Length: 182
Image 1 (tube, rainbow, N blue to C red):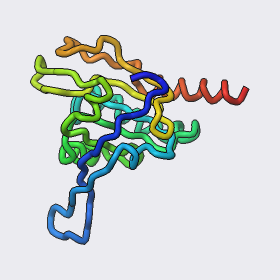
Image 2: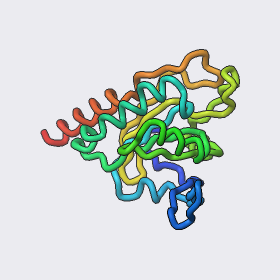
Image 3: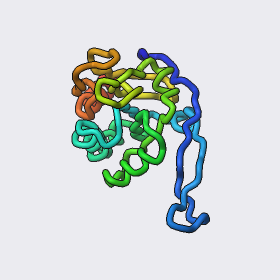
């Protein structure tokens, strides 16, 4: 994926709370499209190898969650966290992380990630197909800035993290906004 490219149009199969259902599991399926998430908004999208994994749970997701106000001050409307995990897993991870600012997007089939060119095999870790770690600033569905970890390949021996960190993305936004103001 490169700056200036439009995000692929896919349908995400999500589970949303619906108290009218009642019972111990009041959730229903709701299909949400790429346009539903991205049209008319300037957002940060970051994708990672898996919910509940160490780097994702300790650094990347909490960094975006805790820094939301700083991103909003730079003109970001929403922050989305995507992973090739199903909606059940993503919802439980969001709950376990106490998310209030970052919205999770389940790419359970990996279709969006594949069409982004970021689907990799992580069989060496027993993960199967997963997303390579990246982040993007997306404006109305078009990639404005792209932050991809180095070494994109199947069964990479490491899990690079830094290029797609919240700090890197926020620094880019601050600099971009300064340039626009000048």
